[in-house]
Image (cartoon, rainbow, N blue to C red):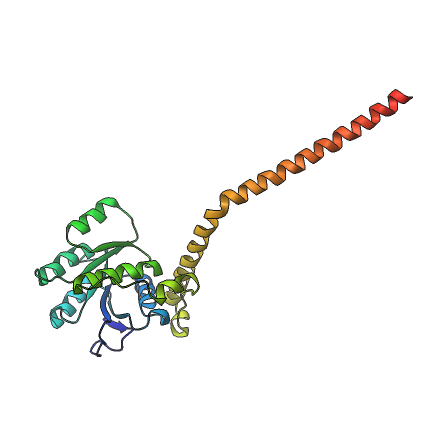
Length: 236
């Protein structure tokens, strides 16, 4: 069942400059994470998201709207019945002269899969889960289709460093909402691990230096103790 997020209902008017994204993913967790990211307060007004859980429903929606109300398709690669790759080829065939940009997502970073999608006309390939740093890539694909220059990173990209992804109370209470919340927390923890990895060599050197100082101090203490005993015996 189709669900619009970030811009009202499916038939609601969308303002100028807003990218209308058709999100296709059979995973409710990954779909919810992408919805929350693209419709977050920091990116308000940038995207209007319509989400469906299958490629067939996406094609039905594109057929009803004749592709005019969709600026971009963001689809998962692995889906039952009709895969994201099949959807990619079908979308490109709808309007060969001015095809709708299609970005493929997958949890597996396989070179052959990426090459296959790009050769079939995909504008980009993103490894799931969708992160805040990927927002500018979506924006660039939309700008390329409209013939405009890619817009500079907006507040939503800068907010990636300081604002975690938070689920609304209604979603946080459900099992799928909790899993999506865990996915958002995992993204934040991943970013923290990257920053820690950058400083790890320096921390390791400090630990080794501290250990060396302790060892030298222990050796000096033992040497001074033995030297004192030898001096006492010689004087006697």
